[in-house]
Image (cartoon, rainbow, N blue to C red; front, side, top):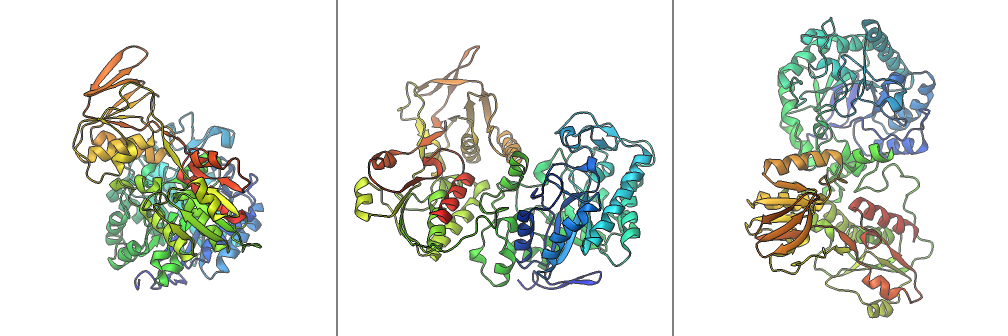
Length: 637
């Protein structure tokens, strides 16, 4: 790791290594913009991780530029004192504190800003849609001034560096791209016109903060849409901005129509933007930071060693394990809890209004979910070695309890093992391995190949019984369900070399879609049948978009709005509101969901014991909930 942990100079500062935590929305702010204790602890903990620089999340320079009621803000002097609390805790850990200045433009909701979003042109956001207000030249000038005002406030709050958010389909990016800018005045047309707003923002900030403060510019170097930015055009834009006063470019990608390039899901390769960064680095004399699926210090080391970038942004990776840089420097690579690119962090922001993480359940709750030693150690019997059982086991053991974990199979991991079989989801195995190492590290006794009975519980005489027995498949009540050509999703995914047969997958949830893709990768003709009108409806939206694209790429046929009525030896019979339909198939895969496995719990109901149910055996949901419930019980039992 000699390259990753080498120093690097930036305009009056010396970075102690090449790791930067980029600006990632936490939304751990009050609705009036004030900083919460959770936000301070969130930044303090990650600042102590050993990176060289941290950028505080996108802070709105104007009220109409907010994307969420819980976004950070910097459009009034009253926010200086609030933001200084974060700058102070970051700098107290000996690292450089930067802040990202942001304006959403059209990429926000009228519900949030109480009016129509502003934009360079009368083109609405392709995802939010609705009316927008095209900015006048006078209004553009006012926003330029607001960026300058915000930069002055940032320096007053104690920040060492300013980053301008010019990417991801937000206002500055909207001006830069022909995808969103069809103006015919001096702020549109050719590259010089479309870059004029960004240039004026940079010049205004440079004028306000002087020559000693580093300025970074985040750019979507590729947008992957018609008329969108590409590398060559982005290089020309950056030449203008370098002359205007920027010192650093953070290379990102995507816009409001291609969010999969903003927060890449596990279906996309790691370090997917490193080559783009390298092209910019070769073309321009400027410090280059790169972001995008860099969740492993080994990957980061190789990027620096190969000269593809000067600095690496490790965002989601540090959310998953705030100690990752320190562990990497100390050579403790096997102790790192790696991000698996499930995009739970993105999903949680938009669904629940705050950041959460599947692999790290304490994210944003660091103080309230701290692990403390047990006052009275107990004997705890955990039944089930899936994500819920493993998490409660090691957390309770770390607190000093005597924990015995029983697993009926020969391997730990439960549904995560099956879920990791597809080549696109192999990173889930990192989570399984982390949990297994934690169990071993804290002395949990594991008894494998043991299907627990009531007699086992009575013989062990535990103080606490934790049931994490998972779930079992739901069987459709149709003729032919026991035919020889019928199998289940779990069995298909457990087969590392499935036979090449024409297949119908009954059930179009996330599991059914993953099974279909898995079989299609092996050359099987596959049809998905789903009773509802939409496939994978509950899956995180970015991941779903990429998954649907993969199914299309592999030619998977999709039948929605059909109900299974009968399974025959050579296929299945379906019925919709309008007609019946027969699909020939050599194999029928049932993926119609699961129900809680409560067999052992039903036996324990009548004994006097402290029994807890967690994970799918309580209610079938997802791995994030199972891990969270395991952790909560582990710190409280």
